[in-house]
Length: 508
Image 1 (tube, rainbow, N blue to C red):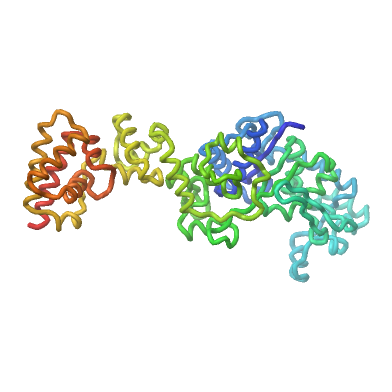
Image 2 (image 1 turned 90 degrees about the horizontal axis):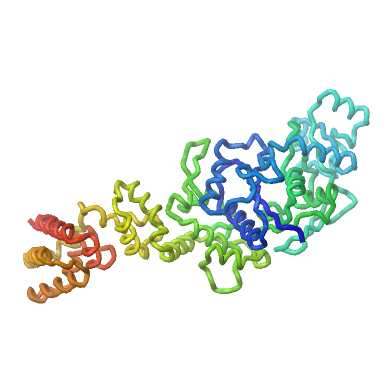
């Protein structure tokens, strides 16, 4: 068996949809499982749709996900160039060979003439039923064709879908054999008037020349598959053809159609891997990375959108995914995207990872919110205390800012009905007692707290709630005595005194 070689071939036209990243992931997992190569090829033959910065953005997304290609425009191999626009000259010979063999033809129809046909004929297609009535090398005399070509008349090259072959069968690893009626397939353009190939010609030629063995792509490409199968047959032989796997769609949360950028905007969640700036409007379209997702959880949630290993397991490391992945276990049906489930994956991964692995990203979040971190070991301790409470990385600020900054705002509504002279007396006593404590641990703080409460005959529950608001500003956070130990004796006493003064004003 030849070495497994798979490819992802995006067009640099915008943000990278999570469906695209899932296609990358499945390619990557299959390649790594079979000790093969994963190739990234840029399909930029349609220059009218090219968006500056999109290619760089694709690479940044894959770098964040940890899905690095073995060969690409950044790290070339033996089968370059890896950008289709740089391979332009090699496609024409294949298009001309198809004409010579009777499988394609020159079409000289102008855009205006084709538009007139569309207006004249409902659902017009350039196909076996209409091509003999149009201006092409099938209908014109050879001399006229030669004159048009030598005179520089613009033309395209179209595949000639056979009229004597009624069915084309696409062997698909996921779906089995898929059959198409050739009467429903139009004569696709292979080479455009500017000399650039269309996707149909380029993908087949490039897959052959780059020795691609398996082609994973979304099921929306199935209608184009008959053209690609014919091109493989005509140019290289079906025995050389890639093995196809058309992946199920990622669906809207209600299951009604493919998930789109507009769905994300409407429902309030991202559909792109990373932030993307719309070149037309200048708007920033939010990505999973920037709202606080880990790459591990992003890969994990995408892997199980349309695939499972046959067990109840949901959390997978990359190593486990590589070991367990198989194309045969990819589902045929589309997978509904559930953002709440996506956040669950992220929460599980935040809990799973050691604080040290989270430190760099969490530190950035604190810095972006105006908090400077001067002690790495302290930050790691804080992360360990609060990570089980965080669903997104951005939650670390809300859940942990009080470890680094004295509260300036308190939950007054919760304090006001509970605050009285006996509470003031209690906390002034606690501050005094803690001042003379040599060992400032959660256990000792709790012991002193409960002893003083017993002496003053006040319920500990009410006091703990007030103590938490003094230290945190709200009723959130880990165990209150652990918070006190973590921020230290001086800061704890300082916060008690500041809060007592503030609470005294509530009923004044």
